[in-house]
Image 1 (cartoon, rainbow over the protein chains, first blue to last red):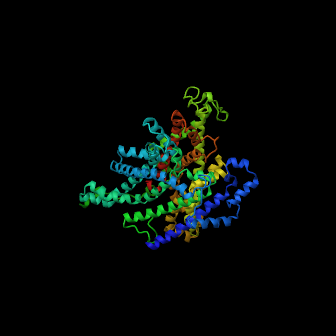
Image 2 (image 1 turned 60 degrees about the vertical axis):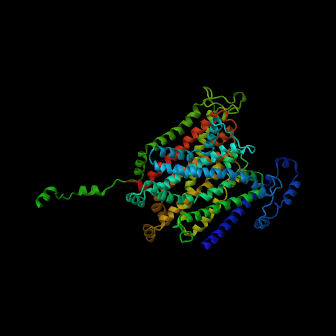
Image 3 (image 1 turned 120 degrees about the horizontal axis):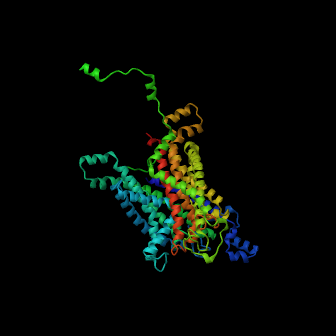
Length: 316
Length: 306
């Protein structure tokens, strides 16, 4: 197990390093005009521009810049933000936004996990009856309709019918985050319900369930002890990843409701040529993705003792 | 006893015609697919609605009182509710909403179809190579991990800044980053089937690789490919609307769902018809594709055939 973890960690480090390098190079492909604000572009002479670029080390040969970047990253020095919040260390810029995204995302995750799994169980119990069809219609609607449209519908319903504030405000974070959280849960409830239902129905059709029925076990015991426990194993795998993704925030939801979270930070940073922020964010995103998958595998192994990761061929 | 049996059972005389009849089956793959598909009434109805919608979008543009290319901004006419002159009302600049909505619907369908087909061709080709050619496995897996681990929004932002924003650029960019899921699905299936006995036999007999891929393996892929194709249409429309809403997608003068909703974002709380018309039409398109795709992929799976 330990050997396996170390091996996997090493592979992940390589992937993160490659991702960071590619993002670094991609950012250097942008025209340097983006380095300046529009005002500066108009006023500064070409000499002044070159001077500023040189001072920022952007005119050095690419290899040199890359080496400097590696050096700093290994020392965990992510530099300072340039345009998002001038001169503030990147870690602080991200940290401020991080809390907001994490709060919204965690609430949304907990709600959608509970509601989604319960909805899936209700659907399974009423298979091919009206409640099941209602649930299926909901999952189809959410999966098929663009989230921009469903967010708009939730927004109109929430603010017109329920009278909730339509935009997030930091002065009034409680009530004003209800609509954004509702939007965030919309899609994940559907996917949890879909998968819970599917795995449970699969499990119900297996022979050992039939045997348990014939033995005279009550269907409640069968559901709780066998079906749900086994159906939950594949679901567990995705929980850490979705938890970690809440940190990165939802780009569309946060932009749509003006939530000052992590989501829109990346695009803002790219369009403003804030290279340090972009690089740090992409390292964070890549690491979150990799750690999420890894934790998912570990959790699955803990829930289901039959699964072993280190074995040959893998479990999937 | 013996006598009774003789009465009950008689030997049948050999008839060449009857022997032929049992040995013959008129099974045809695509006919079966079609028959299975027609059994799903809801999907058939949805498919008809979809085609009607596409045809109507052309008629709608023709019968509308305003032409998209000659729309005028007139603030005196802003926010007219739907009426006899402006069937879907007017937007914040006083432009006719009817022709904008139908034009946007056409743009969305066109983009989604182009991207879906492009993704499919690229995804299946790369997926087959990835699964079949062992030497490429390592390389393509690494490539997949790397592309997949960089947020797509970085690519899209960079492309919109460096190359520009247009229908063509958008569709190429979405194909370039959209083939991954398809390729992965195809690769996993190819891995499953590549070393089955009949493929080993084919290879021993000297069948060229492309022929093994096309004749022996591809039929197993059809249902999953169709499913992904159908699902990629709603998700392309969703991605387009998200990107355009963020200002990273289509240009501001190409009407699409994202652009319409972006313009309407500040107004549709007071003028709900600005949201309802595009939302209803686009939802109908995406839900249709979702259902038809699912039904068709069930029908295409040879295991569901009788």
